Image 1 (cartoon, helix red, strand yellow):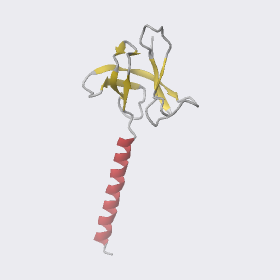
Image 2 (spheres, rainbow, N blue to C red):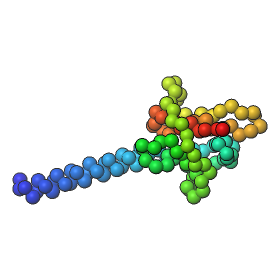
Image 3 (cartoon, rainbow, N blue to C red):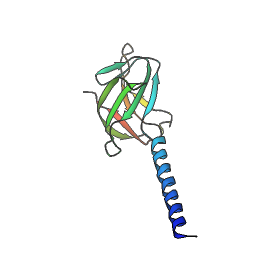
Image 4 (cartoon, rainbow, N blue to C red):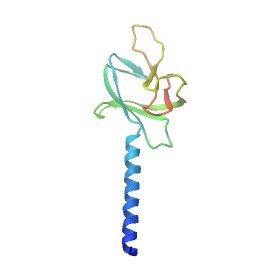
Length: 127
């Protein structure tokens, strides 16, 4: 095998590795679309029944800022700091949110959002 052919093969392998890394990053991003069949609350806002995009703002080193937008991501409903918390043992993997307590006549507040596949959740700060 010639030196030039070895270099081409090496570059092709590096390109494949980079493409795989980029695609796996996209597959395991933090954005989730959540659908609620009744109104729910976040700090300072009530979300009507519907579908919403929940996502992390910024990179993986700053996991404490969450943005909630409409499903098309054209309107922002919430942008704020959260506390990162561990997913409780025994919480089913398909449980993406937990709710706080509230009277029956008011929308339940979303206490924590757990992104799909993550062991870390984002606890909303109600003050």
